[in-house]
Image 1 (tube, one colour):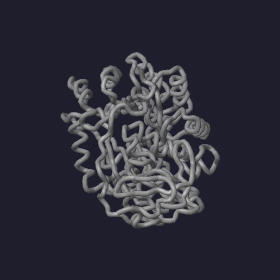
Image 2 (cartoon, helix red, strand yellow):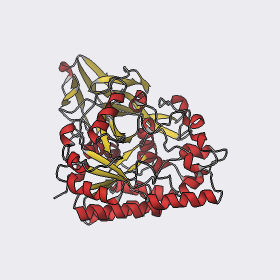
Image 3 (cartoon, helix red, strand yellow):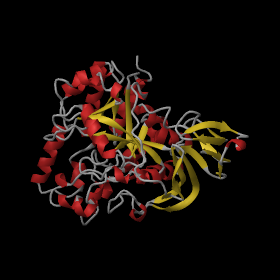
Image 4 (spheres, helix red, strand yellow):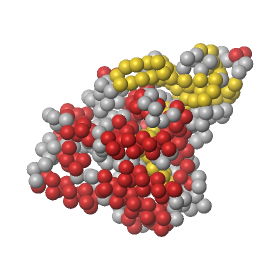
Length: 462
């Protein structure tokens, strides 16, 4: 089956031009003009933008109390064709075994294509040796938590440092959740003892400097090990500036942020009747000052990518979040977000003049694909790449609402926010999955795509 998309304006991470796209099977086979005779089906995309399907490098499906891969059709409706999930490491399993276990939950369930990050939760003496073998298993990124004291997540600095030393030998990118777990734990206990238990105190217990301190520490570990590092979900001005300044010194230090940190403020956490619990995530959402700084960082390339950190809690607000009433520490982390990532970046980034259309494509698709080792198969529209394509209607106007959400939760953290533009059609490897912003594909068609080492964080590494 061949398909020709005609008369649209193609947006890439570096330019914008009018051309037609020929798709044969699952791949883009030609871009140009005069291709009509080659196609069995033609779509007229006049007046529409065409850009690569999104790559969401930061999602949680079916782990940590989140809804499983069966809801990845929500990502597709939002223009994201590939998600990169974090595979938790149960005690006693290796990183590769943990990824294989998580893959069992995705096979036949995921509607989008998907890949995995490894996640270190049970560090053993064999970890360093295993890191050397991760690329051959299709795992090119490895996450460590500096937060969540008293849980299996938090690891000590020496574990991160040794991993950095080893990872650079085989091109594995080390990622860290940067918050000082010791200080967060102490602040949480002090606040609860003072009777300060409402959702807003989640943010009070995790102030920006707690994140900045851990970010600086992670950068120092990277510098001592002479190895690249990626700081995930940067939320505050202080941490962003540390990442920016380290890279300006030619250190291989990089960062990403997420859509809720660009669009929501901590005022949401203060909503009455426990509504603030809907917005509990870690690190927490910040004040407007930090949002403004993050938009500047995205625009200027100081932060490479924007993920969703999608985590739709099983039970939603009523069945999960409300269990934390009386103690903010018991509110489960996470907000649904994969479906709305494109809408938020376009409406509050492109339409507000904060980022260009090219920068939008870069942080939405191209840079995430490069970071995790999926480029050039994913993240671009070029001959030989997968035919993951969004035909985007820039004239649509509406509002974001849970009634249109497919993420399986009973609320949307972005409820009532303006939306300009929407995906009119979305193709996954040449298959039509979304039409008129409705999912029309067959659920469970997603493929596991193994990632390759030496991603974007190694681009300037010597």
